[in-house]
Length: 271
Length: 326
Figure 1: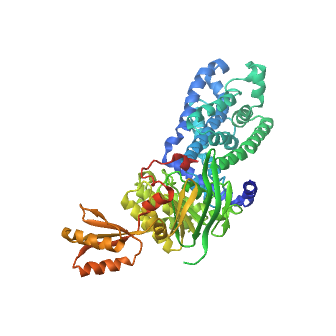
Figure 2 (figure 1 turned 90 degrees about the vertical axis):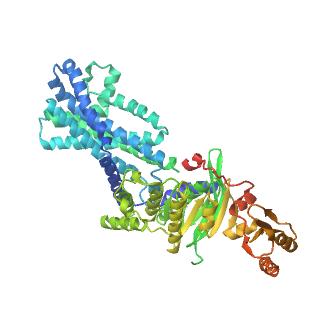
Figure 3 (figure 1 turned 60 degrees about the vertical axis):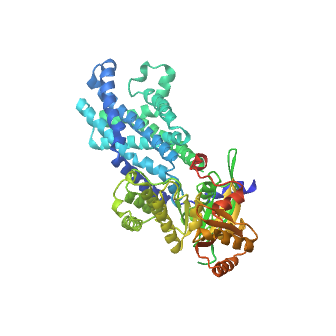
């Protein structure tokens, strides 16, 4: 059909400007933040998880891995920042899936706004979730005996880098959220992604005892790299150039692959 | 009203898997008028609206909306239209005011401008008292009014109303009708889909009847009614005793024996010539018979639908989920 092919090629011709994308995304982010404010229970995962993980792993693994819980916390908490960030990023996909199946986006899509703004806005609103998650984690860890031994600026940098990573990593969840049609299957798939990333890393245990293949993955895993960055910035103040570059490369790659993939699937799935 | 065309669509086709939802639909709506798209569930009404609102890409066909081409300038089209869907697409968790302000911000209102526009629309739709409440506390009618308000924020030239009164009680339905009439007075062009014949009859300047993805009829409501056949004359004499005499007069004039309803005392007979009415009045007068009811009626749109499609409109409200969700 000639008409169909012609239209398919011509449709993306006129787009809204990047400045409008930024403005629209912030308007949509306002929606997300409002929704969090109305339903604070949305934050239950990022408030409970850090506490649960700290208590569970800190006391279970602490003695075995590092000799004592206090020493383990110094190694474990920076890695847990990364893990919490990843887990918090998964919910973006779940709420996107709900919005899409309810047809909430129909009106937005019939408006002269950037088509990706509803998605980008939702991701930006999750900023709140990361801040809360990391805040609770560091606060509760401090009660248990964890000490940040560097300066406030480094701490701020660590939190900023972790959030940046969350904002990039969540596009995997967004992609799956838009791809999978049944909400029931989502949680399982998200877990299947989170587990290898988080446990196949140096967050919980040193990589030395792992089999070669797993250690190899763990070395280049974004979670390990980022955990090293966090340790450098929060605890030992060591050189982090290598892991930082590696982490940034991962963030860039994740964004480059999953952002366009998500937007394309979103536009195609909805019409 | 001028002669400009606000919506011009031709040859729209859309297939979902095995289902050919639209098989070449043409629609024309002059500026400042209401087109009623009438059809049963699954006829393709929602698909057509979604295409014209740039939410779906047609497999074939073209459309120009408020001077903007659907294919080459979808963003331009979106700047001219407002959409109110079958399912109210407002955010349940947010308040009415927040919903409107969000949309206004997206339409490049300033913060203060958005607030003012939201307040203005809440006032106009009698929702001011509920503007600060979460939408999930609203009644069905309030929600639909908010939905309408939401689609009007950008002062659209063309408004799509996809079954705007489905699921509303008669009172709320009347309110929506009033609003729609008011909008057209302001110069807005409305494309309204409905499965309620009465709604199309009440609101629409022209009606396009769609069935299984095709246009089966198109015209003014009275034209459509006329097309399906003549009119009927109904007479109810004041006293039952006159029934026989009136029946005789009608038979003589129309060459047909009228239907006689002994319960209501109503005589009904099809007529081809409307001028007959005055003759009937004169004859009754001459015979000294008074009548409580004397009327020339067009057939109902339900009759029209039966004549055009071979089946009645579905009265039961089994929502065709497939059409709505694709």
